[in-house]
Length: 252
Image (cartoon, rainbow, N blue to C red):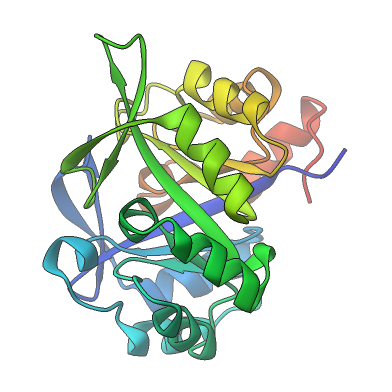
């Protein structure tokens, strides 16, 4: 079995790391370059850097911050936000990212997944999916533009299409759980993990070390991402890994 990965997430707006609840009420959490360097030293397996206002504001990701961050870390680094063309991917990879995260643009032009995978390899393409439970459907719906726009797309159908088009990984965020600290969305994560053969990164809702154990063992996630608990020093990456190891979960 592959070791489970622990991934801090840096949601960046106007050059600062921010965090909210259910995608709203954002508060400052620090400098992205400093936080990235800290997580690298602490033993995080990867980092995700999301320019959360880029798609909504229709502008490109901040290449300079990506360059500075990449210069401070040795672990793999995924960058997303405002990436809507293969040329954007190329620019971000040149700035030092290892993988590209696409969300809104992938929904609006699914061929971007195919083109990115063909050009840079599937391992480079992470399709981020923001999903919210739709009571009328009894299933999850995909949202875009930083969780602002419902798409009418069913999440399970969309992740399968993303895999078929060449995505190497799915970054799955539960909008219902995001920032609540009540635990990852286990039904959503399990449904997506069982539908795919590519890795699934669970995101949204981490509040305790036990929540990571649950999402790895019950929901079969390959990696777990969190922001609030790491940024505000509620749980450290080394302590979390020690706890998971003691419970029999293989971590790096």
